[in-house]
Image (cartoon, rainbow, N blue to C red; front, side):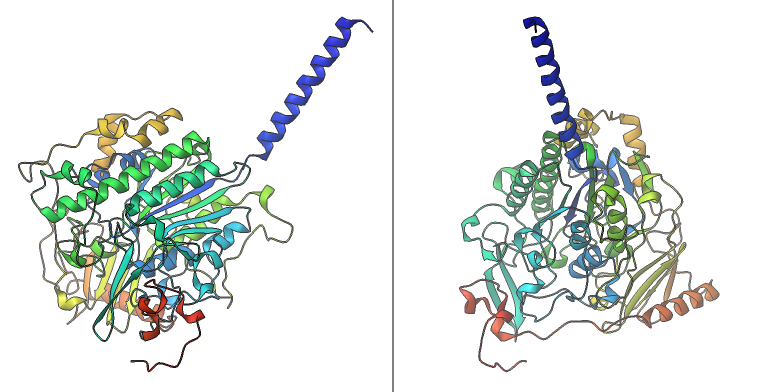
Length: 574
């Protein structure tokens, strides 16, 4: 054989090997999309630029909004624990016993272990599952904590809030006492070494590291539940690094300026996560969800300074300001992008929607039904609806009813059906049943500058998105922003006292809930009350438990702990 022929054959063999390796590598890459689910805590409707806010720039969040789908009619629960239970189970809180209140660190309670939750569904589809940040679904026994419920790792905290620097959680929990303890964990172990590092930076660095270390051969589910913009402990509720706070001195309200610093770091985090996805070539096959867990804590509620303007109410009310959440869906897999979606979407819809988007035959093992049924251990079906096709193709919505909540303990309930919303009862004796600013628009004060779309285009997330081929068009961005902004219209104000008699609103024409139409449309009011009563017949009892004195962090080296797993002498419960 001539040397020339031998060389030719050798080159052909090398090319075949390279081609085979390349093909194997390509086929080994995940064909199921990576899912990045980002939860902002207590973020108000009017705390993002794409809803019309000028006062505090949110360019990275806005970049996702304008190049994805803005959910204008997204509804969540009114509090942290109920909303997170709905994300995880696809069930309304009235069907998991989470409807009444948040879980406290001293309670012997948690999301029922019979509930199959989102990471467990996704693990069956071949996903690696990670959680970073807040859990707030129970931890008194280890089986209730994230790494025992389908997540492979957790860097974060178990209670409802923490100090942004020392990572302690203070709760007034037992006979008027304030209990304090570290609430920062790597899986089950206390993470004392993170003392002094700002919480948002901790979550961001962990999320970015997870993304960079992830093999593209498997799809990733990353649940990133931020501390921001929830208030911290009472002694210093609003916290951000000094170098960030100095950028917002022009905001007249000192509390709002500190809130701006917290929001700045949250938006920065979103940009860094998007950039990491691009750097690892995962962004082109990713679904990103960004939501608030409930309405904003405004005007001093929970010692915070969010804004739901012009919506009525705050967190833990059933007015629009308490349950209408900020939300967007972003993905190159969306067939229609750069839109404002008017379809109703409820927080319980995420589980079936994301599982629907995730399902791929190549990742379905032989013992998994391709047409997955969504059931918990007792066999009860979920409440959420699969909205993937509706949102990805901008089809007409299939959901026309939103149950906001039924809480017989507090004697409150609210239901939206079509354009009509029924509101019964009130919380806090009506103290927070009003409209709280700031409106945060240019011209509302002497210091707020006009909205700058160039910040969005040049943001970290904006640049990554453009690198995938998406081009931002400023007139289109501003049109989307205008369409996503709520305006109250000229509806005459008719008083409403829901603790005395039910109130009725045409929520499509009166989103600010100013004009009570109960007297004008008694038949519609009656229909909604009947529907509400029927739904209430399916509710389960709230799981809230009394505070256990043994849970005191002082008993566990000053840490909030899975105290139910420890041996202890009998204590007298309150």
